[in-house]
Image 1 (cartoon, rainbow, N blue to C red):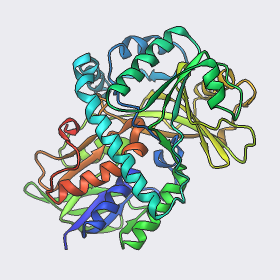
Image 2: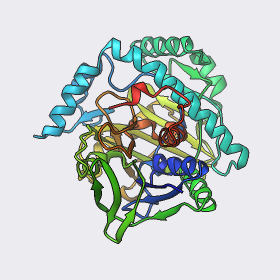
Image 3: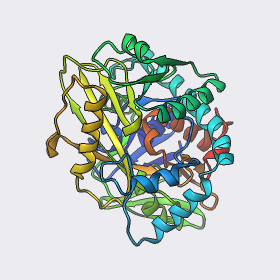
Length: 411
C-alpha cells in the first residue's frame, strides 16, 4: 500500500487525506500546530459558487492603491522592502486583466460547483456541521457598487448560477432577522454555508475512522530525496518514509517548498473575524456587505463577522484594531439595529489566507519532483473549495482522469 504524507492539517490537507484514504492509500498528516486554530476554523464558512472572479482582476490595482491610504479599508498591502512582495506584486499586475479573468471564471465555477456537490455527499452521512443552503446576499448602499454587483450577478447567471436581483423592499422581505439599511442586493441562490469548527471536528472523526495517522505538534524540517523523488519526511520527532507528498501548508507553502528547491509565489492575506454566541436578533441570510467587503454568516445560534485582506507576512501576528473597527463600522452601518461593539482582543480571531498573484489556487503535480503534489493558494476560498481540491489531489496521485479540468490550477 502506497504511503502518502500530507504536510498541513488545515481543511485542504484534511480533505486530501479523506479522499486519499478512501482511495486505499496509507495516509499520514503532519502539522506544526495542535490543529485547533488557523484559517480553517475562523473563516466565514461560506460555500460560494458565486465567487467566480479571481482576486487578480481589472481595476483591483487602482482600487488597492486608494485603499492603501485608509487604515480601515477592506484591502491593504503592508509596505515593506521584500523581494517576495515585489515579485508577487509584478505577477499580480500581469494577471489583473480581462483575458485572465475570462479564462479563470469557468475554471473557478466548475471547481466550486463540484466542491458543493461533495459537501452534499458529506451531509448525507452526517450534518453535524450545520450546512444550510440559504444562498448569499450581496448588499450595497451606493449606485456605483450596485452597478458593479449587478454586472457580476449577470456574469454568474451566464454560467448557469441562479441569481435574483433585489430592490430595497425585496431585501427586507428576504432578510427577516434584522433591519437592513441598503438600496438593494443580489441574492446568489446557489451558495451555502456551514459552521467551520464543526466541519473540522466532523472531518477529523472521519479520518480517525479511516485510520489516517495525524501527527500534530510535529514540525517538518526537511525532506530526504533520491534524485527527483522524495523518500522521507524529516520532522522534529523523527523520519517518516513516504511514497508521495502533498504540500497543503497554506501561507507557509513557499517556505516548505523552498526545502525542495521548488519556488511558489504566495503571500498571506491576513483577515479578522469574531463570533457572537447565542444571539437572538441576527441576520438570517449570509451576506457580504459590499462597500466594506465584510462577510456575515449565521451559524446555528451564533453569528460570525469577518473581513479585510491585508497582504503581509506570516510573522505579522499583531491585531490591527483599526482594521477590526472597520469591520464593526460596516456591520452597524448595514444593520443599524444590531449595535455591534468592538470585540475584545482575545475575542478577535485572525488568520492568513494564502494568496497567489493570479488569484487561482494551485492544485498540481510539481514539474520536477515526481512524487510531490501541491494543494495551496486558495485565498478566501479554502473552505469553499476544499472537498473538490482533496478529491482532485487523490485523482492526481492515483493517475486518474480528474473530475474537473485542472489546467488553470498549475503554477
